[in-house]
Length: 225
Image (cartoon, rainbow, N blue to C red):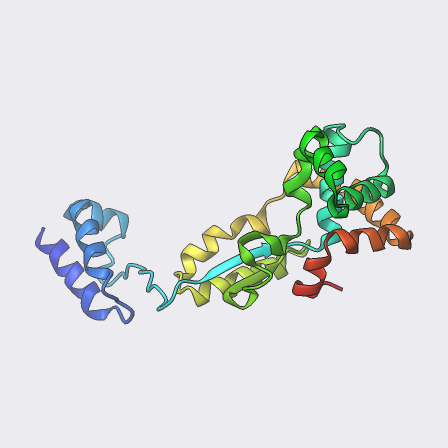
């Protein structure tokens, strides 16, 4: 027990980033350890330091946003390809249907939106991202990370966010390990289909215009190309 107390005292003196949150953390740490387990777990390194999260002065809000075309393709793959909920519409007719239902006004369309199960099923998946959390009007209060297929770029964006939040480096690396070292069967299976759908959209200006209309607020506020 004396060894434990001495080690904790050295840890407290030498740590350069202790905050007012550190003392309770030390107490909790010491209450769960004995002298033997500390030596075993730390291979008897008496000057080993424990990482502390020095919280930033103000909370950091962040959000992950996706390119509207990627988002629309993902919507089509899930509800049309997998769930068969689009009544046989191809990607171009699906874009036309979504745009019509979203933007038409009047009692007829209100009744349709309320009664149509297909629409109700996908409604929240086609709403512009800027409609959530007042992102459109409060963009400057969010740290925005743009989704990318480039895992290295995504890793770098999240690491910059975590550094700003003062998250210990070791914790940040463990949290982001999957970005570099894993892949999902779901993603790999859909990659070819997604590439095909994006190519079909790109070569059809009318469909591009429809998607820009559906996600108009995202293009305006988030500056997508």
